[in-house]
Image: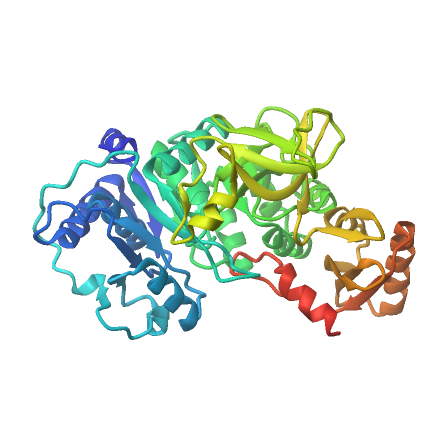
Length: 491
């Protein structure tokens, strides 16, 4: 039996999930997931890695369905609630899914395309009465397929084995000192590694409690923070933007005090500007812990929980993870202060891309996964300079980090959000293009543009500054720079 299920027996009576006003024990989750697994097996002894899609509202049934698929020997394919019909069609076709599980509470089930031989089951209609003998699973078997954001090409299916999943969870439980007394709110999407592993699987692996709040709503989250005893909190930078506004507008200090009482607050999935890091600490007394991860590797780097939490850095390798940097010639970088491509090795690293053997092969080098991120080692900590494809601007022979520019621009309190990209230019290769979202109270936008232009003039390359009402974002609230690049090209 997999360790994730074996140790559940030691905290059966503890509360695992609070969802939609009700509490559910670990024993209830075990029972429910066993019954779902038994239904999926039908007359079979083992699903033998059959891919099962599930489109579920973020409530207790999500985790019971995920565990049920695993226990039956299937491969879980969590589908995005924000996916369009054409996107769902791609996932279903790519995985050759023959069965999708959904529920009455999931309104997005209407987006599931009608396809021949595709069975769509609602949990409420399943006959969950008889338990069958469940198969013994090995760690080498496939467990889950997650899809990348697909901002430049069609989303790729990232295949994780049970070994990958458990390695990701175990590393974080150790590094972030999870205990069964912890309590975390969950409001992140559950088709993404951040929500599935960090927010849900880690606490349930150790016997802690998860309060599932549904899609992020700033007022609801703040209300829950005030009324609950949360000890751990994890979010993406855009959520911290929203929470800062709530804190600044709060009528009393209780919200700030409740954040301050938490033992650990983390940020990830996108770079957190040091200026936001600083503002959060001023408002709550909390030093956010930044980490680095991606769909293909789970989490790989993290600031130390009991050491320095350096703004703008993602710390050191997590337990079991090896990293190295290579320059443009493919040679290993041994010196600090020199930027290079980040490569990762370890049991957390995914098995490969579904149905894409060539892409899988070119993504690895001598067993090392090539992340596509440009990184620098600085005083013992790794600093992400950005995705080589979207955050590193190559202009006039210079390599410019968009993330560093964004950090400086966010120091202007009239700027609510910003994003910097390179757009093609015949002479310079790329020029620096900046999109700003201005706070409502900032009236004189021309002054803000002049201030930004003055700062950018230090780079001595052409620049363009545009003010927008909003920036394009994906379901995780992360700015989609390829989409923004197209907007700025045509602006």
